[in-house]
Image 1 (cartoon, helix red, strand yellow):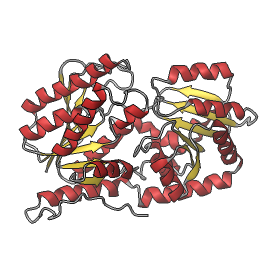
Image 2: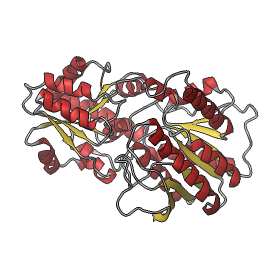
Image 3: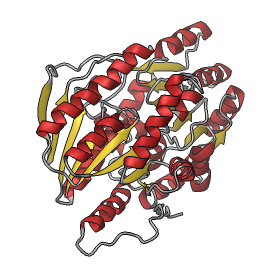
Image 4: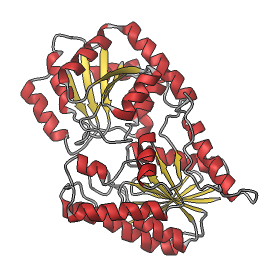
Length: 422
């Protein structure tokens, strides 16, 4: 089969969608299929085109995966006009270059958000006579409304709902990273075929054996217990609650809380930490994805906070911590909390409650035996349930079945939601 992956974000950018899609492409190619990625010039999260990437077009070869990069208006400005220019510039560039450069394909796999990319995906699926797979990693526009960035009932909101409906109805299949996402879509659009492609981890990469005492000494400044938050410093994470918790834990002389990454909220967080005079907190720049297994394994506690309920949104660092046998301290509800509680791989506290977060962090700090038990439970789940090899293999099997001459359409046309092993 020939699979086209259409995404605005792809390595060398760092982030959850980038690593997930890169791993997806690699595993399709490893099964002997042809994979082409149509993406933008790398610019995330700084909002500047990375060094060495200029012009309107660039071709690359990542192993057996062919990558086509096109122009994008790069910006990290959160203003509406510049953000729209960022999204739409890639939509039109993808439509233009994809029409002339992409060969015929069997499937066009579109990553959303941004939702606007569904326009280019639909156009390319028609022009290449391919089945459109619309992958939803975050429910737009619902999440944007919940974050207060889009007013419900406004003209922009109504247009977004129309575009969302169009993307779902034109897709041959809608995939999603969480059950909450697909259940939401299935309830609102009963005729849509859905398939669960949950996020996961490569347990051969993220494992306890990657732990580095040298790195621990470098990051912790001599402190023996390291709690880490690696990832986007954005609005949905509510990282200020972690700083408030750190202020309650000044008496723990051997605890260091590390923030690793970038994002729109980082400058404000650094200012808050200085104001609170926190000497148990360090802010570090983002690290390449290839260094993340060592970084995660070298931590004692993984902190995963959220400040707003986003249906179906599951932070990928949960799975990475599982693979590395690092216990999780989760400040969230919904599906992420269900996963942590069901697998018994961490401690869950209500989001937006710094005191509860501080108490749980103190408990994990004080009890190494508890940390080891929770970490071992997480490793077991990473190997048997959230193993990326198994997850992607099921997806490839489904698409191969579709192309098989003996495959037949389901007479009912009912959505398919494969069960996750428990």
